[in-house]
Length: 245
Image (tube, rainbow, N blue to C red; front, top):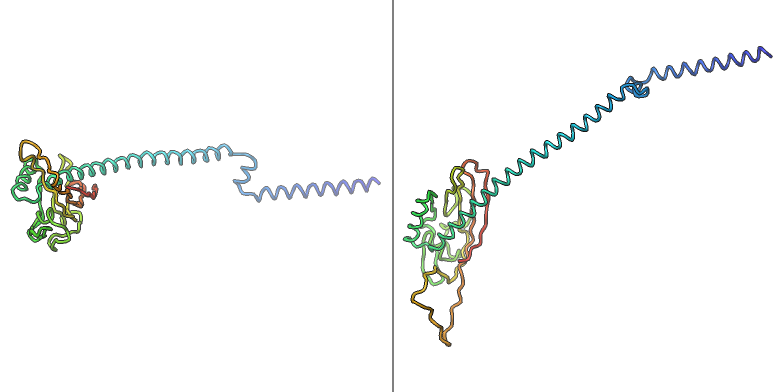
């Protein structure tokens, strides 16, 4: 009986030894990283590396947002400056339209612009011809200002390409960072309005009961403008204007 017990004990001890050997073999087969993690050795280092990577990503994102915001602010500032230059050029073109292409007032207006160092350049030549509704012929800038675009000749050029290749009028605006403004009249709808010459007498003449008042129909001009920085032509703005006169 004792021998039987001893044999069972020997069998149990043998199985326990085999189990221990298998566990030891499994541990040896594990990779070094998994073994360290399974024993919790070096866990603090891994956590520090993970947290450092997260903080680095956050800092990189914040730096990108700050630099991108500053860059966009610069873009907006330069664009708004170009837009304001274009609006200033449009105001000058309105004054030119008020001269209706009359050579004497237009020449005087050009002299005023030169005195203000705006360096005006007029590119409409006598090759541009048009006929008013009353049958009056016009040439040059006067044709664009006094006749419908449907009567314009090929020399009037209705297309607008920004830059020195296509414009009716060019101006230099600003001091230091100068902006060059190009303007072109691309379409005209003829009306019956004209420049205001003021009252011709001391008072207003009352209309008779049988008098029919003439309805004022303004001229309608479509203008295309572009302003660009002389130092950096990529800083530019385009404007399309519908002007009633």
